[in-house]
Length: 142
Image 1: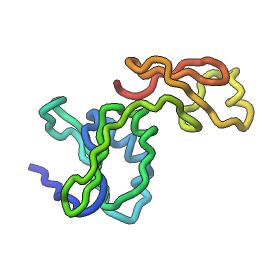
Image 2 (image 1 turned 120 degrees about the vertical axis):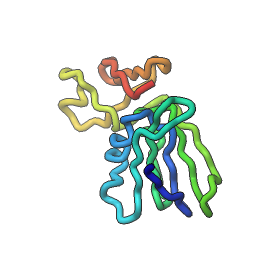
Image 3 (image 1 turned 180 degrees about the vertical axis):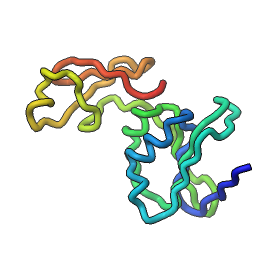
């Protein structure tokens, strides 16, 4: 059996849909850190069967919008003295600036230095609309 110790102070990103922790790991650039990070995949979950987790042995600033785009069902737990002191449920952001790229080749964002802006159109299906060209993008795992 695999055993990953608890952390004294840091962050646990929990209830990640199985198979998506590595994507979050890369987006948060956790591979470039000098502190301990545990990427745990396919852990037993009472709720979903299996899940992924990321344990970060440091308190860092995490972009909740990026996490919401990948998996709006995960939680971010802040740990102090090996206990959860704060638990945040992530949700889909209403508007996303600069993270989602438009795939429409005629969109102004493909040809000019413009910060992309996507608006949530369909929360149930995680569909966003480009503010500039109305092109739709499906995001996340919901």
